[in-house]
Image (tube, rainbow, N blue to C red; front, side, top):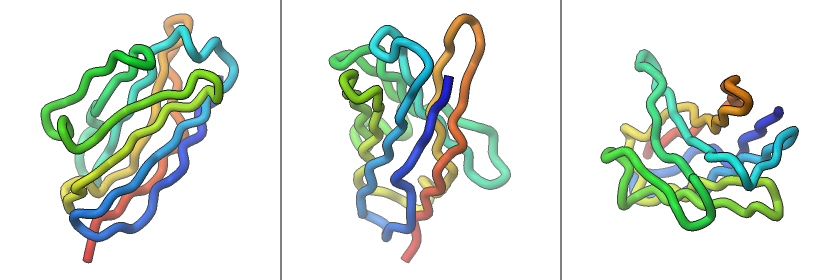
Amino acid sequence: VQLVESGGGLVQPGGSLRLSCVASGFPFSSYGMRWYRQAPGKEREWLTTSFSEDMSSYTRAVKGRFTVSRDNSKNTVYLQMDSLKSDDTAVYYCNVIVGGNEYWGQGTQVTVSE
């Protein structure tokens, strides 16, 4: 199993970014995909799960601002982040549990600052 995130960067408050996570090594369409983030000095925080192309759930902190989607034909899950705030600054990770094992990508840094 391999997960590779991309799309992070520096953005001003109120701006948007779209993160991508390309997965391989397992039947992507059959698995829920999760996004987490970890801010400096804080624990890793679950953000959203994409159960299928039309079913997802979100933590309250990002609901209405972040949107998860997936393209099963490309083995890719996306995280569209809008109305970004300085508190959204963190390393963002995608995650999957396959065969009872938990897998993480390397993370992508998102910095929200003037």
